[in-house]
Length: 473
Image (cartoon, rainbow, N blue to C red; front, side):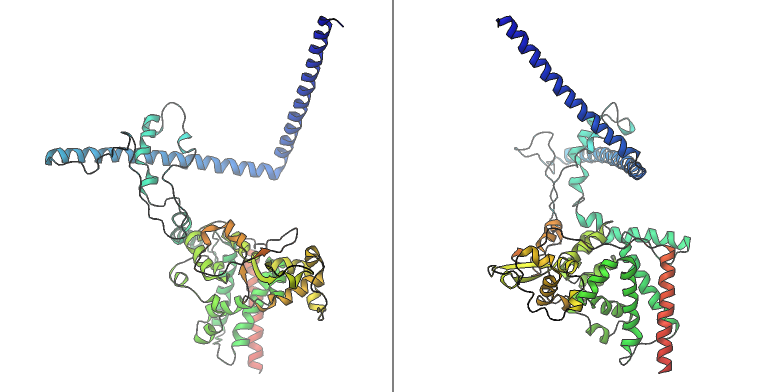
């Protein structure tokens, strides 16, 4: 074969390969385009897209306002600096702030911040993308972009301490401010419940309000001898109904763990007295922060004081507070020796989530009283796959004794590091022993008129029946 023929063949092969690659890239782009069109055709996706656009527009407007504030603050700072210079010249005294030798002429002095324990460190810089809100011609009020960049030297992020801190954005004060605005609206609308950032807390508040109303209406005054029937029994039935209707999977969790602490907590809140307070588990006794601040009531249901304090300080106004609560409950663990649970395993420290065993044990714990031969399990997968093994481990670890032995999975503090407090020994030690899939407990849906009427009717019947039985006795 001549060199010319070989060169022609190589060129044809190269062109053929390029055509294949181009066709493959075209088919890939075509498939991606089809997927994109299908997702846009989905009504749910369209609604999400519209909501995203609304939030994006709102975010852009807020950023524009923030840029305007920056510019105005820069002008104000410049004016104050000129007044200071003028005053210094008049008094023949040096300026209050002399630039250091290591500082560039246009560099702003470093901002000083006081970081409190458990607070996320705040850097003195603007969020990424803030100054890209307007990228051409002039900014607000005819100010050139150069003026906006000059405003960085007097950035409010450096002058307002901890503006991006959890407490500043989602702490107790923002919660109180938002709650006041919501309550004004509800008063005008005639609603008896408040829709807050925590639907879980809305349910709790409504149940406590209706319970208190019913107890007061029929003049039930819980006494030492009748606390069980006149107070604790209605509270127990109300909370059981709440969990059964709004979160059936969680009702199974409460039934198997015998987690009666929230009943005692609610009874104490309805009828605060020495008797009801003494029945509270020590982990549920309120902290100083709980007694001082206003916050979503679902936080009271967490049995670890340090986490309750952290949630109040950093997440009281967080729209995701219910999810954080459900995460916390799903991360309850109990420590154990692996050799007691798995056959042939070394005696190392491990910890097991309560939800992992409950979701796999089924009804074995209730129907099989003899579980002595169920442990140790043949292997780790069998511990969670076999209902009898899971039930035996659940009983061995004392998970049915309430919160006494519970600790927190370290993974919870990896997800929410601001809630970790090294002063409290609530983090489990050892290695996690877990199934392939781990569940997270569900959150209740927001209140509506139908649910309010269901609560009202149920409590009317429950407390009325309790009162009638007491009078008959």
